[in-house]
Length: 275
Figure 1: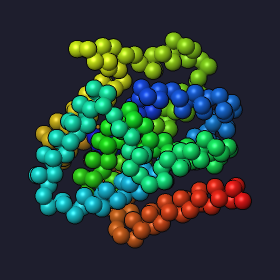
Figure 2 (figure 1 turned 120 degrees about the vertical axis):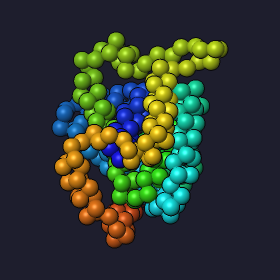
Figure 3 (figure 1 turned 45 degrees about the vertical axis):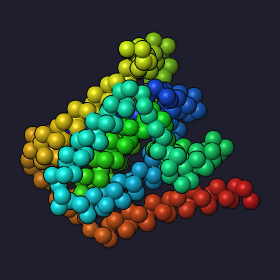
């Protein structure tokens, strides 16, 4: 689970820096919110929008994966193949936009551009969680890991960490935007190059290799079960005890209910502005 969380966080970072929209969000936050207090406020609201979209996806996929947990060997092999395929797609620039298959995602994206203030930031976060042609394989890989976790709480946590991987560098880059200068921004943006007649990008290739490496680790360590622990045993036991307190259908229902409440609040605020 630890390596899965680390992968999810790095995936969020690389999704933020993906070639299609590299530095667009940090640039927007840096120019729109000049003071650090407002930057932190809007970054928090942005993360709330991300979580409102991503965490329910994780909860649902984790619950779905628990139905097939008895076929673990087959699932591990299939997951490794899927992750390798997503890694190759990412490295070669064959992306996809998951927002196109989710009902209402396009409308949320349009509303985020039409609104202003905290509501706009919340909607922007909700749309950014699943949108992006270049980030599609990255999110697909994280969702795949969430499904094979077989636990809805862990799957929801995985997607929450993925969102944090977007927000933490977003806030840091926006806060130091002026100090970065053109050279620093160019380095973060990466660069394109041609290989065997095909245009590739350094960020996409690094991300694709990362996903492929995770696929091999997932297969070789029986779904990360035999992976050496990144945390001390006592710390891991403490975290598992706390997570076990959050498991169960009641918590799942409450989490989904909270996500629905957030979605209804966004809808109510949007319709109220039209009236």
